[in-house]
Image (tube, rainbow, N blue to C red; front, side, top):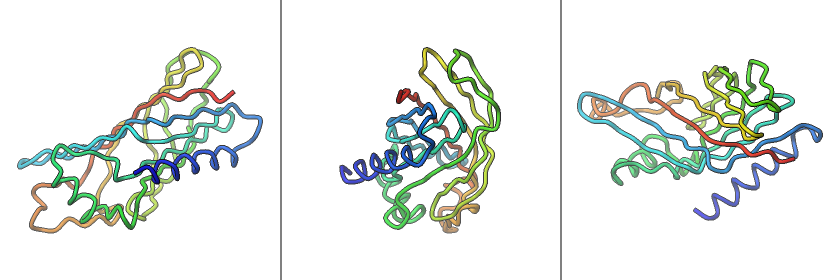
Amino acid sequence: MNRIRKITRLLVVLMLLHFSAGAQNFVSKNIRIGLFSSTPLEDIRAVSDNGNAVLVAKTREIVVQLAVKTLEFDRKLMQEHFNENYIESDKYPYAKFKGVIDQPVDFTKDGNYAVTVTGILSVHGVDKKRTIPGKVTVTNEVVQISTEFKVACVDHDIKIPKLVFTKIAEFITIKAEGKFNSLK
């Protein structure tokens, strides 16, 4: 797990170097990302507080990454099945989103902004273009984001065996929230 954190931190630094030098950058190392699936037989929940993200104010670019194995489930057996049978986290260790906030946001002024972010969601080795709704709140140069959206398992080639099809929903609800600090 320590190795994954080191790699993730290195990736965040490399992404920052990639973005324009004069732009105000924001970073977060503890984005909370959760998933929820509900069926008549069983609810499945998992959450991680280990999402990493970079936001470049000038270009409104945002990159979010999660080491999939950091998701913790209510039951360890669910977590094992999720990682081994469905998401194949040894083969596809990260879920990522890279996009651009579609609306202008003044990151220098306190305020709330309803936004959409258009970009590429990469899960289970499959990239899909998505437009995701969200909220950006700026308070005293701290940026907070939140979003909730659904992902179809089939969109990312996540196969659900017929034996457990009634236990896993076709659509998984994803929630993400976190605070970014300025790197001035």
